[in-house]
Image (tube, rainbow, N blue to C red):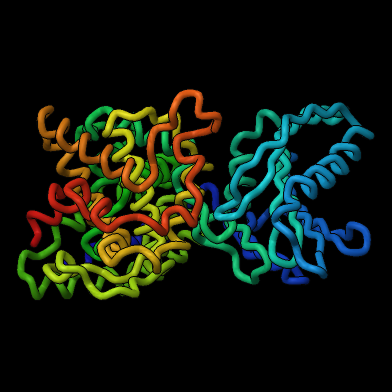
Length: 483
């Protein structure tokens, strides 16, 4: 029975795909200015821009394109000049476009490219060849200035998504594409992900029925189909997905299912249940099954992800987030961490779980979800990483184990009655206020979101008791029931 997982994944690997052309390839700039993962069948053209710049453009078959312009700065780059540099570059590009068509450019806005500050302008362009829409984005590296762009016909939504997915792998001044997100640290909590999470939290994290049909077929892809594969991931790799991660996996399954042949559809719809049914209850046999699944499925998932199989990519990315360490605890274990198997390293997945955990507390406490944006989340993300070593031991170990702690918090919230939820909500609000994530005061003059005024250096003053209070530990179901 323990071979079922290997057989199912092996069959899926051999399944006929109608979209094999969406395989990707790694592209490394000859001058090592950047590395990116691009669609294998999109052309790449690198051309000079004066004496110190290059434009590398990737073009698809339907008129969509994206590119990276890089300009060397021998004397280094001053982040204080970001707006000025962005204005000069963008005006030059827009001026060129105006020579051959009608341009409509939005206002320049500050944003984030991963952990880096950036400036963006949305642009529409209409010429004899038709209308295109996209954006320009300027970001500063350590030795170069970069302008990235996306342009696609208005009816080419899928191609634009491909462009943006590729740019999410852009690694500046590196030779390996970034698998974890733009600029070495883009959060999964995009504005759309934040909205979806808020809706789920407000709905009490109510789950879909197991037999709810996600995609009709024979057999149909159901909610249980996705949950079963996630449970296998949890069993084999000790993974606790966040709400956002699960939503991504669910959507990738939905996107992938119609592209498979009959055998592939059956495996995706029913294979997970078959694997789970074959797991032994004997501890020694389960340990052997776990090792087998880990050893045999990892290379299969990696290969399928590289081939463009979306369901595999979602699972592979989840595993990779947990193998990427972004910070390690320097302090000795606090008392609560001595009681159980607490990890001392914060992985990229723990960082994502920490961010979503804070947002969960924000929404559960009854605060306005729209006050938190992807840009302000990015600021807090940087703050947590930069100040990790300065945090008290309690805080370090909470962040390093955020996946499990946050999973327990969600479970407790799901099961709580109205009275208990009110008590939890009050505790969440007190904790958020204590760490500086308060509700902006009317007339304060900030004009931004709830977390806009958080600076990385500010969070170095987080008090241990503010984070290690009942909202995080004493009322946490995972902690209380497991230790």
